[in-house]
Image 1: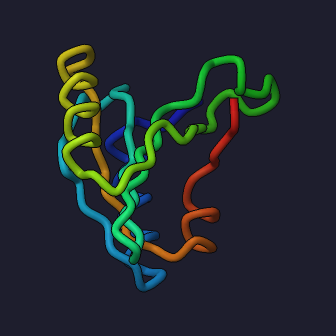
Image 2: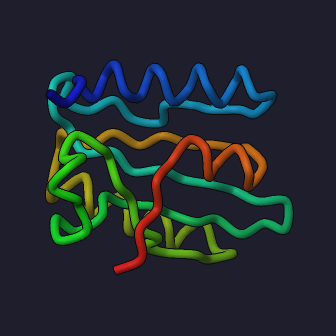
Length: 115
């Protein structure tokens, strides 16, 4: 059984803060089953957007996992904002979460799959 998006995002933000990082919910989506997009800003000014991974990346043994794939990496925040605007128009139930954590913590918090 998969937990609600609201609960998953709440746990993600708490874990980010408990590890000494920062997390913010930029946009709240549907409580039960909204998709989650994650923004990560690094110290060099690059922003990376992670979106839900394609369904083909999910394992039959763990269908409840939330998997992500790197969608856009750019030093231009406007490029990321334009992409997010398109996503919100397509799916108004989407959540947007911003994380500022070190790479090791990010790897513990989010499962990233390469398509």
